[in-house]
Length: 202
Image (tube, rainbow, N blue to C red):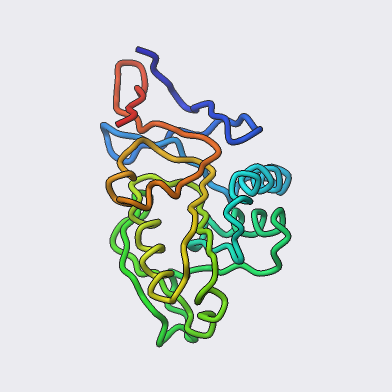
């Protein structure tokens, strides 16, 4: 059994990087991808790589969850030649008082959260072919909530793009929507092992 300490190597499309291993609690860890900590060049290349996997879906707009999915949405939109993208918000801004809402939980955030779709942006997705993108699909909870919210706004969700998928738990959370997922790479979860962390793919 191979154990890892400190960092974990992974391919994200055409790019090889090392991700820090961060403990969730004493016996489990994740390889943490923070898109906002990666360089502009890395995200631009990742956007092109992911756009290449999504292009055949003919999306009319790209949507994402705040915050770590925003760089992904920008670069995928740019690579597809799209001039607009939609961000589902988590912060209760003043203009979102009557937003469409959906509850969610995330593996990297403590406590429950709420996704908000600004009613002023409904025209951007209603009746449109929408591809939802994010940084990592882990438990699938955030992506499942985003799909429900977009569909409540009238979107035709035709694909889900991610830089990475983590383990396999997201299949159950997404149900039939798991077939929509296209990613640039995959990472395991990690459990404590002698001398470090051992990969767990389930």
